[in-house]
Image 1 (cartoon, protein in one colour):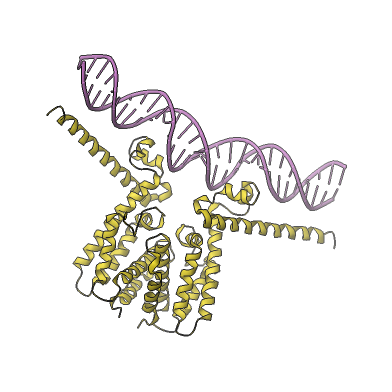
Image 2: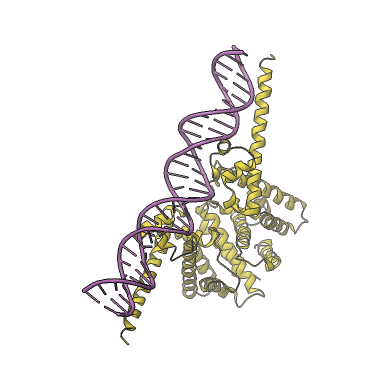
Length: 196
Length: 196
DNA sequence: CATTATAAATAGCGTTGCTAGATTTTCTAA
DNA sequence: TTAGAAAATCTAGCAACGCTATTTATAATG
């Protein structure tokens, strides 16, 4: 019973090490992307950051795109939690405003992460059975807002999401001047606060 | 008077030829992008399509990105015209709906072009003095819709644009199922039809 | 300790955007 | 008409990219 127990502990340690390294890769990718942009997140650069040779990365991810996809999923996890927190802490009547603000705050404070989630065209399945739970959870937070009222909460949620994403994306790509952001959010919230 | 007239005609012809080739490059880029995606639009591939060597392309554009930027500007020109047409032909009371539909129709029918305009992060200046006129014109078409009513037509226009872009982008990247598109447009238009 | 299994590194392939330098074509002027 | 200048174009190659077959080093096993 001990001759098998030792190999188990070793195997477990190896697994832990693997996870640590995987996390390091994702973390390095995020950091570089946020500081220097996604084109600077090369496989060579990442292997340098974690002090391993390139092929090691391919033991963790299928391809460079796989790394970006992992970052994106981490992003969906985080935005989901941020939206949930905003929704639960908001005063009644200010819920829509709080969630909208949280969404845009997330996009503004981590533009490269937001870019990975939406703009880099990664092949993450969405509205089907293989959709990662992190994505479902994030979308569910938006759905909560329009659950009671109206006849088509799904469509309304989609429009709310589309509006927020549009603002975030056009701001991120410098189409919108950041100066009017407050006004924009105010008017946007009014549109969705009481959709007769 | 003739010794100078002849060189002029030659110079003019050369200029015409240059323009033709420039247009060929842009056209080939659009075609390939729409059929095979932007990653397949390589400088080698383009030089092949126009039957010239690679360096010739760099006599027309500063870089590969410069070619994509030219495609994007062509796209803004076209969407501007499409929106204007929709606005002018629409029945009174149906103007917002007509423009919204035209916008989404444009994005759906030329997804790669739309991607070049918005998703590929090209450095086209926007809200400053160097903004290309094609962009100003396109945005002006949206502004027309909310000119009379409300106190802040600019902000309202931005929100309308953001909403349309959000729908277009999330549909293009498979976040939204195309099935509910009609419903989405209907509800979206209602939100903006009478913003008290 | 010898052997086997596993983990990691080296080295290199094919492709990319881009460009210096050689070459050809075109125009100018004697 | 033709020699020389100017302009246009091509050839060939660089550095960097994603990715991988093969070799080498490390670790676990009997």
